[in-house]
Length: 114
Length: 115
Image 1 (cartoon, one colour):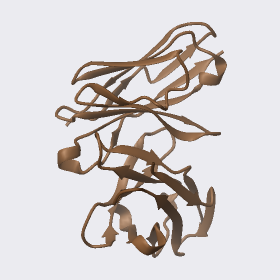
Image 2 (cartoon, rainbow over the protein chains, first blue to last red):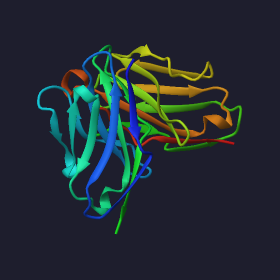
Image 3 (cartoon, rainbow over the protein chains, first blue to last red):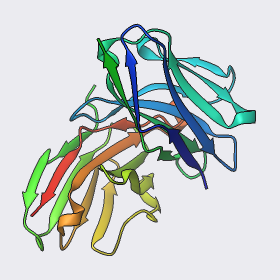
């Protein structure tokens, strides 16, 4: 069974600083990996995804993530934080069996200080 | 294009009452998921359907919860009887596995408060 661990329930950065949100996964088969963002009182939106191919994937709003199989990690980064990045971020893993069952991590709330 | 549509957006009910949450997935999507979000437990997968057939309901907390998908454009999640600990935001999401490789499209959620 797949699982996702996000390190740090809260991360605080200054505006303009590097954003690093950590995610480790467990999967018995090659996984599909995702990062989603949730703004207050809204559903989740896809930021980026890894399926196959290039291990460094770029998403919306300047975010990117690198799939490292040897480390079973899929950390999310952004070179320069913006106030509008403040939100909750979820890492997710999906296995391509019977309809893409998707499991989410506990989430990391990102705070951006002016 | 219309996204995933959930109703009601907010529901306040009393303990013991029946609650029905509704979801209309994106047209053409063949997978549908129900999640529950709480502060304590995060996002929990309750059940998911593929081509209208329940594939995995191991996340349904107990027999008080039931979900149906009578056709490709409609699903319900029912709680009977409801309890205060069921208070949460319930999300429906849909996916077209063969096209979007598992990307989920979420509705805006149904916030349930059981008094």
